[in-house]
Length: 261
Image (cartoon, rainbow, N blue to C red; front, top):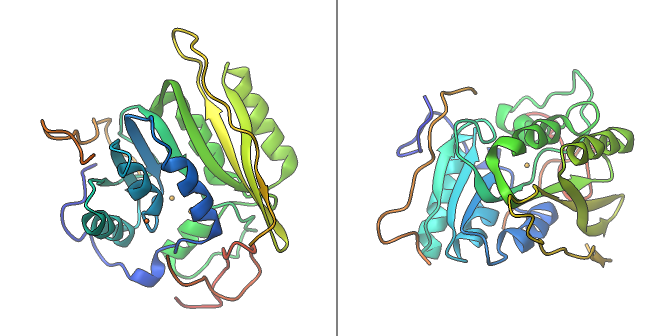
């Protein structure tokens, strides 16, 4: 049954939470932009994007299947003096619509049979054969969870299959949505991207656009539909870590563990 995490929800270990790296930090730039009244951070991981959004005064919900990730974002929000509502669910299952959605989904192409032995690390890294398995599901669910006129920011990578990404982009645009690359960051052997997806507002109002930025320097069940937690009458108030393990992966630090985390 879908519910906010209010106490430990089973086994979990801090090392099984994806730490904030370049891909997390590039998303924080968009999560922390003021202007959104409600923000959903899907697959929150370390929670840095959710906390950045909460600093703007928005009502923020952070989801993950990893219970340790939800405990971590709750602690971080408490330390920062902001309010974030952690909810354990698959992507946004069971939640209402939001004005802004941010997500750093797993984007590493993962051939069958190469699963990481740690279930939570595997969940954070496994992008499927084309690197788009979770991103594809997420885009499909945006029609339900993104308010008209709202915007979603999704992290991607040059390691994802370009043809499959182009088909996904055409599919979204075919529904009347817009898809724009708003940032990219070149790392060694990889280019990280941020894709901005919007839904047409009912009034057809103009939405701001962002130019792509280039820099040279150098991730997640079913339940009946249920409304997400709401802030109290007084409203909501008004996010890094070690790398992954040593195996082929992106220069962003998404790597497979040789065994056992």
